[in-house]
Every structure is written in structure tokens, then in C-alpha cells.
Image 1 (cartoon, one colour):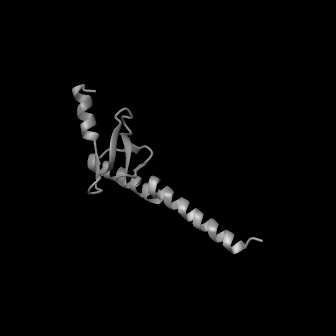
Image 2 (tube, rainbow, N blue to C red):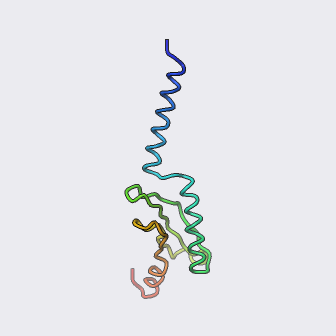
Image 3 (cartoon, rainbow, N blue to C red):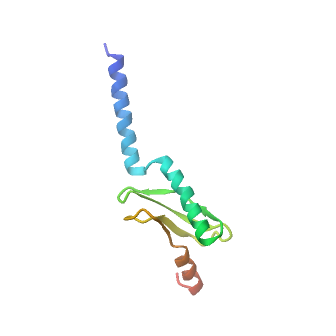
Amino acid sequence: MKHPIRSKSLFLIFLILLMGIYFIFFGLPWKSIALKKQFEVYLEDKYQIDFKLNKMEFDFIHRTYNSHAYPVSDPTLYFYVGQDIETKKIHDLYKYELERRNTGRR
């Protein structure tokens, strides 16, 4: 006969192990939500226009979060925004993409 306490303990250990593996590869869900808001505030403060961010992604090799964004007024101007891999500070490529578009480069 199985011991119910032992079965529950093994199940909890297995569940905690699975959650740990998930967090290693996909990051913390609450951190992703918080950083998405920080990215949006960063862009809107820096450029004084409204931006829309796509789904947040987690780079498990560098332990950083990133996304792609676009101005609400111009959804075709799609650019990268994310954390620097060394300092974890937010940076973006909005000006680069805007300049690239204005000069006709692809």
C-alpha cells in the first residue's frame, strides 16, 4: 500500500522541479509583465509618442528580456527594444530604424 504523504511529497518535488526548469528557459512571468510596462514607459518618455509593444521574449543565455515595438501612429515602423546583456539597462533601435527608413535603406 502506498503512503499518501510520500506520494504527495514526490508530486510536489516534481512540480517544483518542473517550475524551476520553466523559469530557467522562459523567465519569470511577473518580471516579464513588469518589464513590458517599463519598456513602454521608457519609450514614451524618451520619444514623447505612444508605442505598442509585442509579446515579451526571454533570452535565457543572457538572462535578459526583449520585445519589438512600433509607434501607435505608424505600425509599419517595427523596431527592437530590450535589455543590454551586460548592464540590463533598456535600449532600443527606434532612431536607427527611423533613419534607415528615411534614407531608403533596407
